[in-house]
Length: 266
Image 1: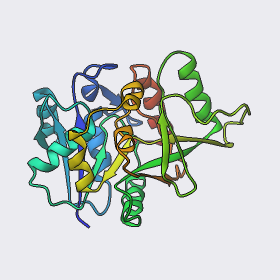
Image 2 (image 1 turned 45 degrees about the vertical axis):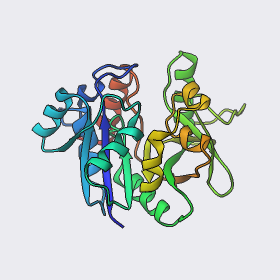
Image 3 (image 1 turned 90 degrees about the vertical axis):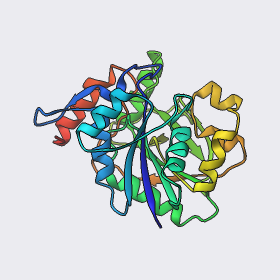
């Protein structure tokens, strides 16, 4: 099946303006922007036909083209990455059987997360959208809870039924558990990894739907599919020793740089 990866990036982030151009220093001391690191992560994914950066900002366009990325300019009216992916796919003439949204704030996304996601959607013909989930170990759960206690959003969690169909996504930590866990202990909480794989019909329909109350409350674009009765498949991925974190707040920069240092990522 033909696969397109779109990396949506906008400069005017509410929580962190200019985020795609923030520099992150890796283990070797090399500094690269967030958008370049996200593009490099996308280029490592096997079985992909094309990778593009999609933005409405010439500063991001210029930076992306400087490191060799293909850029598709999209409208300022796109309210989220899914709408931007839909417009980018249309501008490229459509025709891809799977469109992957690799959000530009997740530079630590391993290639096997995306490869597993694509395989999961290919194997589930009734699913219209798929997204990865990662079981939290105690250390990650502690970080998520600490961020919420401090009034920050450190990540999104997911709950799903026995067939891995999503029931809900939240910036709160769900499900609730009163237990305490050692750093390496598995927990019942799943961290949602901000990557999506869409079938083209569902992606094309998305921009015409109004944002529902849950999407507006949580600020989570995938809830629009669920509020319109579309099935979202959760695909469990394995960390394989890799740490994972998204860049949501300025405080996440040193956290991600520390993780890159510990994992030896340049």
